Amino acid sequence: MSDIRIMLIDDEPHVLSALQRVLRLHPPVEGRRCTVEVYTSPLKAIEAAQERIMDVVMCDYRMPELDGVETLRRLKELQPQAGRIMLSGSRDFDIVVDAINVARVGRVLSKPWNEVELIAAIGDAVETRRLQVENAELADQLRVQRGVLSQQDAELRRIESLWPGITRVEWGADGSICVSESDVGRTAWGKLQG
Image (cartoon, rainbow, N blue to C red):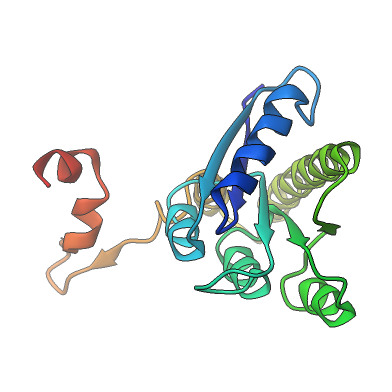
């Protein structure tokens, strides 16, 4: 089994450290390791989510660049199957409503959090994502059997679900592939050159 990929977003580094410690001491799914990425910038987190799949994203509500609802809404567009959890120090009911209605979060947890509740919420989000991915794959298999979807298109969808953006290619008028400087900069070769 692969590692559980968790993205933590909070503008307070000490909160991120505390969350990492909890996850290191109490993995949310027995027998599976966690790979945790932390971001103090919601915009950097969104950029990272364009390149790799996350199982769960946990985000603070109050941050300077974007609030948690908008951050999770954008991440939902990039990775609709990733579990989304909001952390908030506020007891404002409108925040909870926005988080659920706009960002489709699965849970809203209060700060300070209860470790047992936090681990359970992440474990639930991992299982929900697993079921969504499995259902999508089974639905595509059925579409292929019925002739509604080609085997090639089903495979492209599967690959895109593993590596976001990998199947999106901009073609030139002459049939060449158009590559921007930012695309090259994100590659290993581009990082060596930079």
